[in-house]
Amino acid sequence: MTVTIALIALNALISWQAFSNHAMLDKLKHYPYIESHRHEWVRMLTGTFVHGDIAHLLFNMYALYGFGTQVEYTYMDVFGNVQGRIFYLLMYLLSGCLANLMTYFANKENPSFASVGASGAVSAVMFAFVIFYPWQKFLLFYIIPIPGIIATVLYLIYSSYAARQGKGIIDHRAHFWGAVFGFLITIILKPSLFGYFINEVLHK
Image 1 (cartoon, rainbow, N blue to C red):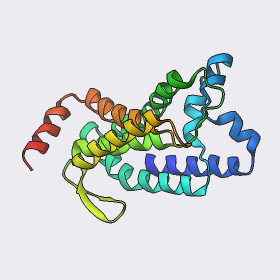
Image 2 (cartoon, one colour):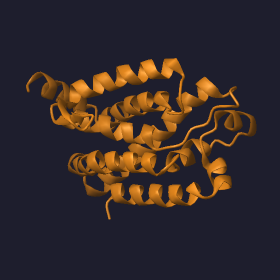
Image 3 (tube, rainbow, N blue to C red):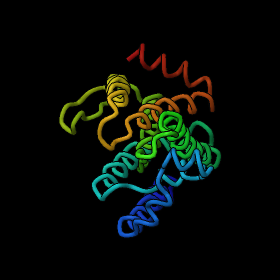
């Protein structure tokens, strides 16, 4: 079983149970105010494994499968089979937690804010993908083909703008920072990948 499939299975299992168990959802969700005042820091991790509804879960897991499978195998090619899987898992988990940490700093005194979902971690996987395949096409709105490097820049701009608006229940700040950390962690693990990325971007 690949790490990606294991992550999808774990997300699905935990989220499915939490759909009908509100006490479980309340205990696991990312809740900066509670984290700050009760020191329940583990929520920054557990919040990445629960989702608001089935559509939210399916969307994230579809993206994780589509991008994560390729990124996991590429990590294995770059770092070796065992180390590559370990690094891939660490990148996913750490990016999700760091994305929630940024949300924590913005909302630790806001008792009305809480969030759930793997979007920050999935965004990290997507941006790790772009390091290796910057010109591979994405389907914008599942219709319009657009190169990955352009799609990611637009994604960052939109997420940054939406986070500043502070409207709705979607944690755009986590999307933005998950993407940033996924890119940075991959480069930190192997700094030469930055040169590879630049070369790929400039020599299409």
